[in-house]
Picture 1: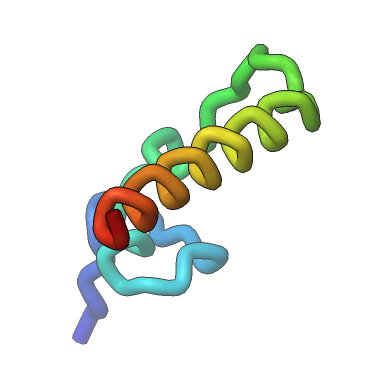
Picture 2: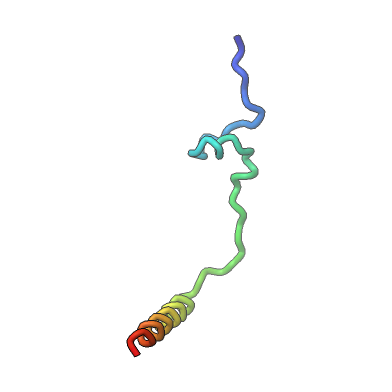
Length: 62
């Protein structure tokens, strides 16, 4: 008796059974040409979050 094989070869590196059944070209991650995020953006986000929290907190007290 012969064992039937799936039409798509499995990728053993994919952990989940659904991902193992996908064709290899689906699992390839695309390359992004975006530059790395600068630290200046982190400080701007921190300042904006701090100001928003302070404004909301102060409006509930006043």
